[in-house]
Length: 212
Ligand SMILES: N[C@@H](CCC(=O)N[C@@H](CS)C(=O)NCC(=O)O)C(=O)O
Image (cartoon, rainbow, N blue to C red; front, side, top):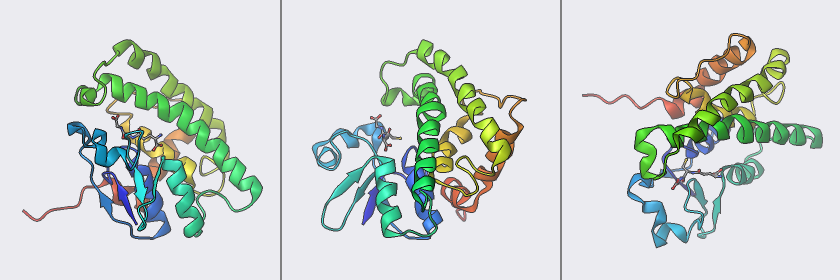
């Protein structure tokens, strides 16, 4: 098995953290998005949507979409459970995962893609109005999480889950996007510190030290 995508950039980060939490070792194969490698026939044969990450199995089967990849790995490596064990846990985690992804994550993604200059290689028409419209949606997404995080250590309840993993990239991007955590969201601030300091997250997002 291998995963197409750069381990510490974009959506592959979510799979890399998932893999770290499981304690398994799957190699990552970088894809040069800025030079359009993902739009070449060889990559399109793996994912016609021209996106990373893609999990390629030893028989050549390819699975794309971050959550689908995580679902497959969860079935193969059930411990520690990151997508729930009981029907109720599974549904609760999926509910929060989708709330985080379609609210907070998508708003941050829109601001990132439409306001950060180097992303123009992927988003040739950057609409600053779309970025501006989505900035307050990031805050709304966080405000939605505040009451939940005031009562639970993690987004979906007592345990770290895929719902927290989905939040990592946007949480890390807030400073770059010029978004301040609202003062009335102290539980979100606490959770952000906890999640970004988590060993799996730090390992994926901290560049390896080179001797030079
Ligand atoms: N829904 C997909 C989204 C994947 C995605 O947006 N990948 C980005 C990198 S973070 C990509 O490949 N973008 C290529 C492009 O914009 O041309 C998932 O969950 O995996």
